[in-house]
Every structure is written in structure tokens, then in C-alpha cells.
Image (cartoon, rainbow over all chains, first blue to last red; front, side):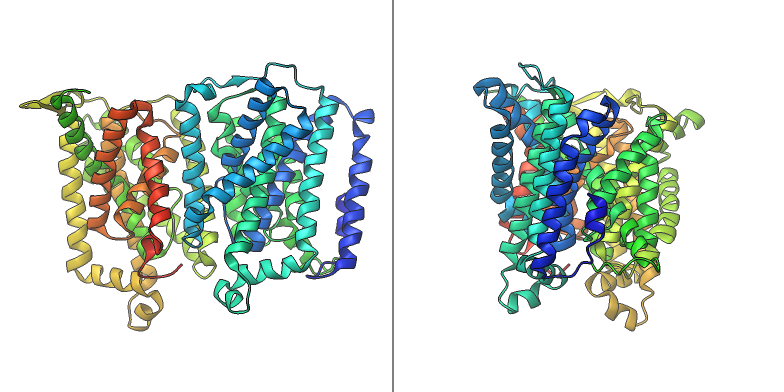
Length: 322
Length: 291
């Protein structure tokens, strides 16, 4: 997938390029669909994690890179998706594809519901608000016994086998990438960037910044809830501290910053690097987060456009505008 | 319905605790006001203060409440290199870069606490921490009163510093318009560095008080940060006296929420208030300036 997308030079509004990218995504989906026939469990585990991360990072990148919304509330929607998925599976026996769809709808609906509060204030206060929202939902789950309280909920049926789960995660990542491609390869991308660069000027040109930001937030939240749903099914048991944990928000933010904020390939490269880093440091779990922190500081300071941005500066590759 | 003694005790305890909450939020508030930086490592600065108080007691045997000035200087000085090495180089790079850098500092600190001090919850154990005071029907822990007095004194000192000294004048000028202040000869970088350090020093003292009144652990920083943010939102950005009012309001409301809904809901009430204020103050708490 990465190779196919990398070969597309990028510019703003280019429908023809968009078709190429969609074709590349479909090709990648088709190729990876058969991965379980060749790959062992270890690689499928890694693939599953990469797919979940990619779905989260695509949405976060759309918000931060295209609409200027830096969220620390990813865990809020991951957790919501997890609880919705378990509720549907345990009480109604809903089939899994439908469950994931409902997760996405719920995530988007919550985002739309809270957006009046979060968008009143610009910039940094959105960040602070999303952080508080995640904490609020977590405290709610801890305290309300109907949601399982602090001990959490078990999935009553057996989760599907790993190859099946991998394919679900693959489809989730595909849907996320496709949605973002559609946003980036249509007129929407121009509007997004106008709002990010100067909200007031964009408003004067007839763009409605509120709607644009809302669209990005709702889409990213729907993707995060869907990723949370499939992650929960794989875990088989969920509890508020894990599913609403700040770790999700940290991971997503790290991935996009490491990959390159606002760059199309940023989430993919970031997700691959974060998963690889996690594996490389698996023997030192204590230092894992601190090392991620140091990498973040260094990248923010010296490579504002992440690894992809650095690569684009090499003489052999073409320019990658933000 | 609980009797009047329980209700009044709860409210008094909430107000006293609110004074301490205000001090824990003060650093966040002034840094936000002067530097336009949401210091996401603020909660971890509080934890640094709590550990500093704890080890000060263990190594010197001196009561941490007497050693509070030492803790303040210690944490304040620790913050200087953080500003010089990490924040100052990003001065011209938008607010997000600095905020995310502090976020990285936060996760590094949290990880470092676990490595250095283990994941155990601790508290600064003093005899007076468990003593209860009674005034008529009202009963509250002595440590709350001590913490309240120290917090309010320190907040008033900072208020004096900001409103009546030359440094305070520079600070207020930098907060309103950093560029104009620089044109008029204010060394904005120096003001920002000192503000950051002052904020950290206040966090150090606040952390010691919280550590004496409650248990804390290496990952307490996240909860502290959220509480502090709620105080800042309630009290109004960058206003020292507003932070005191916000802290007391949050402390009282959390206590009432805990009493009526159950103890687990204390923090939930804080977060709900936080989001409600965000939603219903259209100009937000940054009404004077724009981000």
C-alpha cells in the first residue's frame, strides 16, 4: 500500500490522482486480505495493531493537519466504541459488521453533540476540552454499575479467530484511508486548508469554518469509535481505565507527529514506526513511553513535518506539500 | 437527607480544599496567561512537588510544611532548563508545538517517576494529617486548614507580585501583548522564563500540600492537571484572584456533588462543570485576547 501511494505526487485538488489513490487502496486491501493465508499469528497480531492505529491516525491527521484541531480525546471515542460494541454483542447479538457501523454512527453522534461546547473556543481550548471529555466518560463508566463499573465487562460470546479479526481491522483501516482520501482529493481539501491556515479569511471567502471543523471532528470520531469497537472484540474484556486510557490519545498523537502532521503518508508511516518501535522496545516496557516522549520532543523541534517531511527533503524524492 | 452537621462540615471541608486546589492551579493559570501555553506537564510538576516534599521529610526530618520554601525553589529551578532548552527554541512556532513538547515532558516525567520511585502510592505521613478539628457542629481535617492558610497566603503573595511590582508590570504587559511589550523594552523572554519558573514553584508547594492531604502516585499528574484546568476555566484565565475563587468554587461544588451523588462522583462533577462552563461562556475564558 505504501509504495503505491508514495508514487503519487500530491497536490490539492486533483480528481484524477484521487482515482489512482483509490485504486491503490483497493489493491492494497485485496493483497492484504490474503495475508492470513501466508503470515503467522505474530505478524497478524502486528498487522491488526497497525490497522487499528492507522484508522485512528488517519482521523487525527485530518483534524490536526487539515482543520487545525489538536485532540487529546481519541481515547474518549475508542472507549465509546468499545462499550457500544460490547453492549450490542452481549445484549442484542448484533452481527459484527453492523456493530462496527453502529459504533461509527455513535462516535460521530457524540462528536456532533459535544461540538458546540468544544468549538466555542479556538485552538488550544479544543485540546483541553477533548481531554476533559475523555476523563468525564471514563469517570462515568467507573461509577455507573450498569456499565460494569471499574471491573469492566466480558464479551459473552467467543471472539472470532485472529485471521477473521485481522480482516475486520483491515477493512476498518481501509474505510478510514478511503474516507480521508476522498476528503483530500476533492474540493473539500482546499476548504479544509483554508480553515486551518486562517479561519477568519476563510469565513470571508464564504467558507463556514464551523461546518468544516465539525465535519473533520465527526469523521475522525466515527473512525476512532469503529477502531475501538474492533479492538474491544479482540480483547474480549474491557474496563474503563484501559479503553478510556490516555495511552490511546498519546499513541495517536505520537504516530501522526512522528509520521508528519498534515501529510498524506504521515499516518501510515507513523503507525508502522510506532508499532515497530513498540516491538523493538518490548523488552523494556518501563522505558517505552519515555523513549516515545524523547522522540516526540526531538521531532517537534527539528523535523516539524515528521519522518515523511524529512524524506521529502532528500534530493531523490519529490516535494510533499503539507 | 444527612443532618446539618454533615452538610456544613462537607461544605467547609470543600472550601478549605478548594483553597489548596486554587494553589495547585495557579501555575497553570499564570503560564497560560503570559505564555499562551497550556502546560500539559503541570500535573507532573505537582507530583514533582509531592515527591520533593516527601523526600525532604525523609532525608532531613524537617516537617515538609516548614520546608515548603525549599521545595518551591527546587521545583522552580528545575523548570528553568525546561524553558530554556525546550520551550524557548519553539517561541516562533505556534502554540501547538510548545504544548505538545510539554505533553512529551509529561509522559517522560511520569515514566521517570515509575522508574525512580516505583509505582507505589505514597503520602507524606504526618501526625496532624489525620487530626480532626471541631467547631460546633462542623468537623474538618486540620491538614485542610493548614493547607488552606498556606495556599491563600501564597496566592495573595503572587497577586501582590503581579499587581504591585516592576516584574508584575512587565508580566502583565507581556500577557496583554507580547510584541508591544517587547517594543517598549520589556525582556519578554526573561519574563516568560521567570513566569514559567514561578508557576512551577507554586506547583511544587501545591504538590507538597496535596501529598500531605492525600495519597499520590507516579501517575497522579493526569488527574491533577484536569482538576487544575477546571479551576482555571471556572476562575478565568490568568487572573490570580480569579483562580482562588475558581478553586474554592470547585472545591465546594465537588464536595456537595460527592455528598449528594456518592463519593465516586466528586471528580465527575468537576469535569461536567468544566465542560458546561466551556459551553456557556461563548467568549471563553480568554475574552481579552485571542489565541
